[in-house]
Length: 287
Image (cartoon, rainbow, N blue to C red; front, side, top):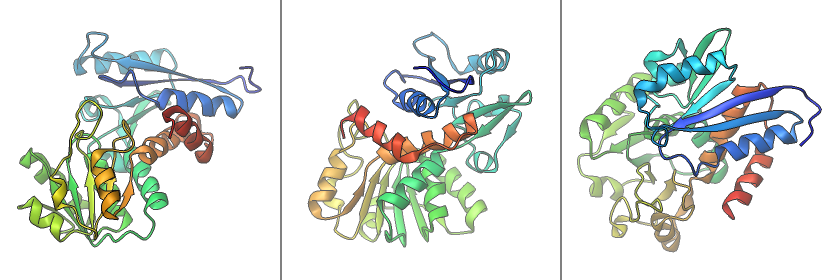
């Protein structure tokens, strides 16, 4: 498409198993709508036969070839940190990066997962009761979602993970940022869900390739809001059961859109049209 702005922004997504990502399409369409060009590439480590030890080389290539930046996902969100020059305060607090900018010869790590989830929550579950929220899963984007929930005002965030040490580490980091006791580790998940006002699934259980639910559906109750970060599919078995019970629900589409909105702003210094990007996401997903 012809553009009125000669600028071209080179960007890419680094991760494993990312061929189906909708992020490149959302970025490129929004740039085109604004009259400039964004070229957004997929760098799938597995497809290229690479591992995280290739990250320094990829960062150097990004600098040399004039990339505006990279998005990064599993397994690079933490592995990339030692090779960056600077971190934003949020990325430092989360110990996770999903967006890298190249500016003035430096690589700067940011995290738009947390802000993307926070904006999706504000829009999708306004006035939700955040008295006591149970979050299942603290790996990957889980730490960012936990940070967002506390930023939104969750009074107590109860974390559960099959990797107990990881849950404890995330809880400790969150308490250092938000205050002692704001994040705790679940001793008895069923008992915690029974007295919770909200439930957030940050595990892959429920994705098309990982079918099922992250907890027994009979544990759900009408006093919960239920949120997912999964968007393949948008309507998971957990959300379907919660909606049938009468719970307020939030799918993972909003987080996918708004993390891209925030990353687009960082990459281009242009203000994205969030509603246009949401409409494009709905078009891509048939939602």
